[in-house]
Image 1 (cartoon, protein in one colour):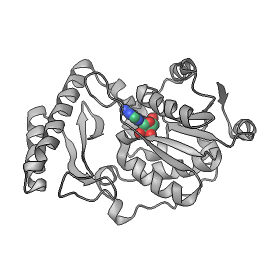
Image 2 (cartoon, rainbow, N blue to C red; image 1 turned 60 degrees about the vertical axis):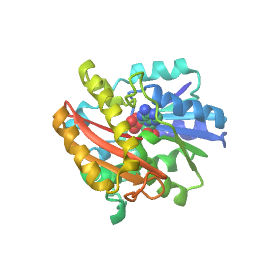
Image 3 (tube, rainbow, N blue to C red; image 1 turned 180 degrees about the horizontal axis):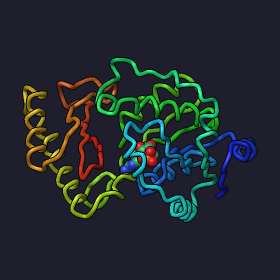
Amino acid sequence: MKILLNNNSLFKSLRPFNDLGFVPTMGGIHKGHLSLINKSNKLCKKTIVSIFVNPKQFNNKKDLKSYPRNIKKDLKILKKSKKVNFVYVPKFEDIFKNKKKSKIKLAKKDIILCAKSRKGHFEGVLDVMDKLTKIVNPQKIFMGEKDFQQLYLVKKLLEKKYKTKVVPCKTIRDKNKVALSSRNFLLNRSDLNIASEIYEKIKNIKKNIKNKKNISSFLKLQKKELKNNYKIKIDYLELRNTKDLKISISKKNSKLFIAYYLNNVRLIDNL
Ligand code: AMP
């Protein structure tokens, strides 16, 4: 496993390879990331993982500051997996060397879910993914369905602009069914128990949707109940179509999306 600390060493090392799978991450490596790496390892000759906490996608300074960082531990896990050929650990300048402001703007119809509650977040994500794809030039990029809206927006942008293919990967959960996330490192046992209970609740809510004539008012009520029962802030609880992320009026081809706060940590999930 070769560690690439700047673009020069990246360009030199990657030049011979034309079947490259790319797994972009912000570190805090967990089994969710490893599942993406496994898939890349199966479908591509070489796998490169990037670790970069992108300040541009944080709409909240405190969140950026507290984001879990442990590069030594991350490198150890990646090496142990024996599935990673290259790890790219760029500096801010390697990616955003020309300080020009990003021209990326979301279409009005895409300002929903996290885009509505985290202003500027996806502009930051799309900007970094655009730059990373240009630098790494991979054949395939592996991304998790846990961040479904991110996957949807990145796929739409990159597959139009580059030859690369964005490959969706299933959400990996812990034994209590909580979706794995680097942010879970910021939660204590009792928070994780609540997250597990909330998973069961939303699973039930989704199950019960088929019987409801008016989905939107049913979900509004469920959201209120969750909010009151767990004393949590909920950004959204919405059923949306997986093709275009429009609000759904039936369960077909749809996912139930939630974003909520536990102990000031923002968690998202979809099922
Ligand atoms: P992050 O480091 O949180 O930016 O995530 C890097 C990539 O890993 C993104 O494509 C995420 O969607 C994906 N990912 C994060 N958590 C999970 C999970 N629990 N299951 C599958 N993929 C995940």
